[in-house]
Image 1 (tube, helix red, strand yellow):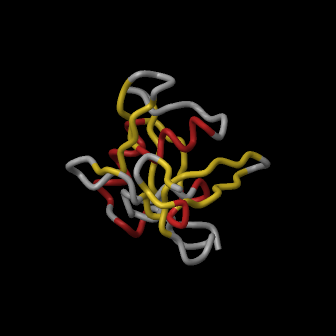
Image 2 (tube, helix red, strand yellow):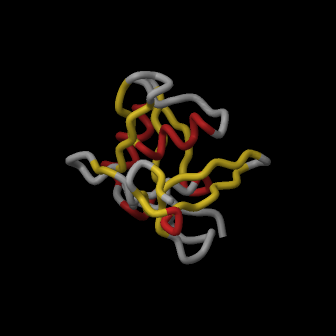
Image 3 (cartoon, helix red, strand yellow):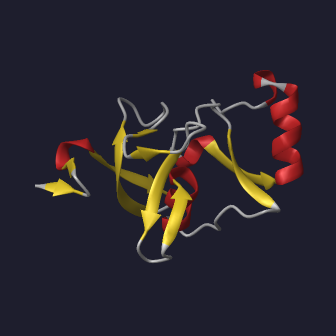
Length: 116
């Protein structure tokens, strides 16, 4: 059995604030990054085609959309607090303004932190 060409063993249930979805991931612990194992964009972001919305999306943004949160847009983005662009762990993402996301990127790794 497979899901979009991936074996079921490579799927993972993401549970976030009471919602669950199955996504193609590689994870050894829920506190660690959940690495997208589907297709990729040039900059290292996971990529997914939404048959619902008829276009490609960054996997992390689409996972958050499926969990009931807004998609990224020109004003707001999902910031990877873990700095791993292929991560789709909802607990590693924060919805911030594009300006704040750019500011954090300029400041470097020490200015984004995951909750303990």
